[in-house]
Amino acid sequence: MPLTTTGELVARAHAAHSAVAAFNIITLEHVEAVIAGAEAAHAPVVLQVSENAVKFRQGRLLPLARAAAVAAERAAVPVALHLDHVRSDTLLGQAADAGFGSVMYDASRLPYAENLAATRTAVDRAHAQGLWIEGELGEIGGKGAHAPGARTDPAEARAFVAGSGVDALAVAVGSVHAMTTRTAALDHDLIARLGATLDVPLVLHGSSGVPDRELTAAVAGGIAKVNVGTALNQAMTGAIRDHLATHPDAVDARTYLNAGREAMARTVERIIAGVGLSPA
Image (tube, rainbow, N blue to C red; front, side, top):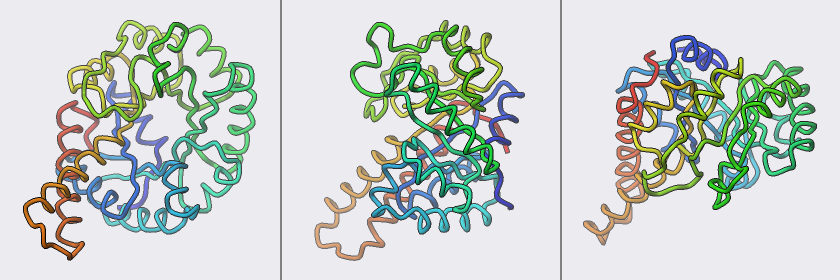
């Protein structure tokens, strides 16, 4: 199936009051598992490569991007490529040529005015390359995510979207990056107010730590893109640990990587089906 774009998938989901799942990939096994899980769930999916993943791959974007694009084109469901949490202007400039149809530019660590200015510049560059672009307002990662003022303010968000020109906005509503337990409680009143205030789709980061029922309610309230990363790494690492514990003499990487890949595929299918995300 031809590669699609995140913008198309999110727009379709947003119009249907649903959401598309976006999974962060690090290895080829991640790529294969996400596509297999999405195919099993009969749903479109977004493959996301973060700036940290690029750093892990020794600063080289193309090897993983090319592998993901080839796998996506052979998938039985629509698949898009998205460059996630970009801070580097150099990396942003590489996105379109590497096959990505969208980027998430992350200047959320900066004070509001600086975040707005940096995101506006990134939006102009991205749009000039034909890229759909997501911004972020509020604090999603770390201990500060639940501190006063960390949540995304609807009035401020409206001004940010108008001033920056972003196509979608990642919002801080109670989720936290890198959670290993599914115990996050979202602010559904805030999600509803943001959905009613903004004319662009909302994105939920840190979804690995959010229970299915919370995700389902968030999607009903206006979230149109659900980002997942840590849950895949938990599944992969756990399966590999179990395999090596059971087979302490194993040396063939294919055996334990296959266990990890299968565990990730099951996780992808469970999350998509459990939340009832947008069908293909």
